[in-house]
Image (cartoon, one colour):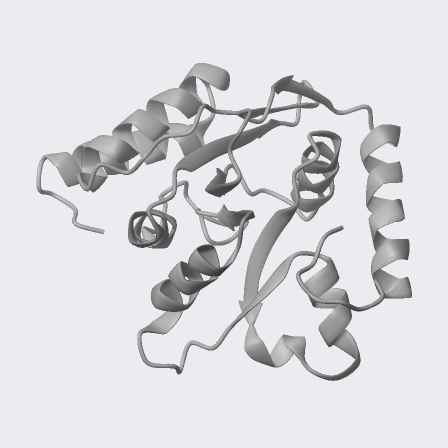
Length: 209
């Protein structure tokens, strides 16, 4: 666990981290494609997001790769006794009511840090139909950082990361490349097929989301 402040790591965060690592090793997950060497700042775009176990396995994999994953959370969660725990676990407080919104705040976080690997579940919820929200892309573009894709194959208990990809500004074309990469890992997953269909609809002007 890493943080940018001079303070003690909370007992709760140490306990939670040890439990996560135990569960990751106990379930026998393996990393098939390693996290790209030399990447210190990026958006880690993960899919599919189908259960709460996704967080456990992904946190274990990033620990194994010596990567500190960060996540954004509502600023009110970073108050009182929970503050240190949230920061220890990689949390970044975001106040959506501030001028400029989430994208500007996260751009400033990237500018202020030497390392920041922001994890985003781009489908939004576990009940997603596979279509992605564009927030991850807009943040990467604003911050000038690459996107690293991450998948979890529950049947084979494997996790993999992609090479870094810089956003070109053509969202539809970039989203199609992202979908094709995911499909190359789990070709029969309906969520990845839905993502591919979404990208093609954007390219053809039938969907601008």
